[in-house]
Image (cartoon, rainbow, N blue to C red; front, side, top):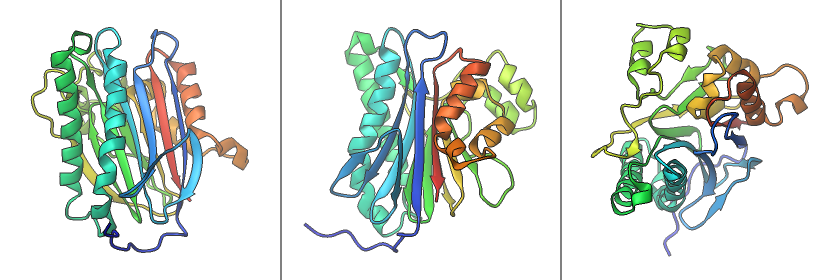
Length: 282
């Protein structure tokens, strides 16, 4: 077997992650799912809810999805999305070994398209899966750079170590999201808008084609990334996210930021399934 090309050493850079999900105080089941992977072209490791590891010669991927559909279809949709990532992403590792700068859009777009086609196929052939859809927000960490793909109203946030405040990298695929991005409404008005959860794009369902948002961020030590479903931000404003991601006090207070975020959101709202996945560059 041909060995993948060597990559720049990154033994001094590690990732620390924390993931939590909760069905909330109203919903009877949890249609959210999250995923952490460490992989190369030949092997793949599912990550637990908490952990820390060097980038070394393996990449990392983290994702959250929020399923929708009748009966149990929403749960199936979100789980299928994360399982497809597990199957499809490692084969792209060799491209990441020589740099994805010129091709990451194609890699991520193909990944989202394959998930979309799988959901449409199941929805068409199995009554219990009819109409199922899911959001998907994915972060792929290679040495020095994070590539992301997104569709729906789950979110990817970036909190740089050098200041400047928290940034929402993903764009909500809703009309309310468009109104907010274009300055037509403020954060409070967007949070309370009656159509804030009406999606214009998702994977599966009746959508014939999908066009995910893709992008890249160069990261450094101290940066923090947050992936979450819309249930989390139903209870928390951006300023509160920052306070919970960088809490004052001991290291123990920052040991499990995803759990802290989910619990705080549930205390303030809790009407929806709620998921947070926090990745810290250390």
